[in-house]
Length: 86
Image 1: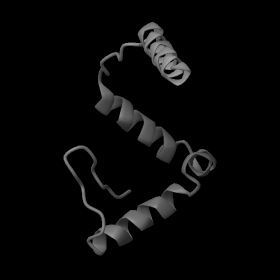
Image 2: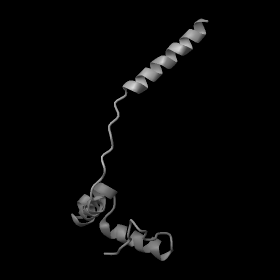
Image 3: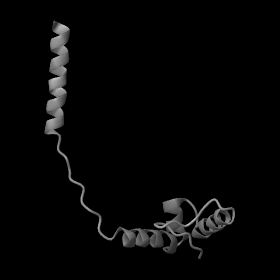
Image 4: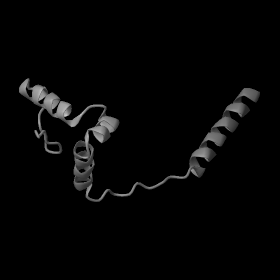
């Protein structure tokens, strides 16, 4: 009997906790494509030091890596991401 009461009390506590949880509604993202392009351009064009701090390689190395992977058909542009060269 005690075990049943403990199980029920635990379930009630969990349900109350879920009911009282504060849900933060997700806001729609506005202009995400422009934000993404700005972010990538900032990383790649603000100098080698900034690029190394963000992605741990110089931009020239990233472009060379993209060229190698693209030439071996291991990397392709998609609808949302383009693979460009400098």
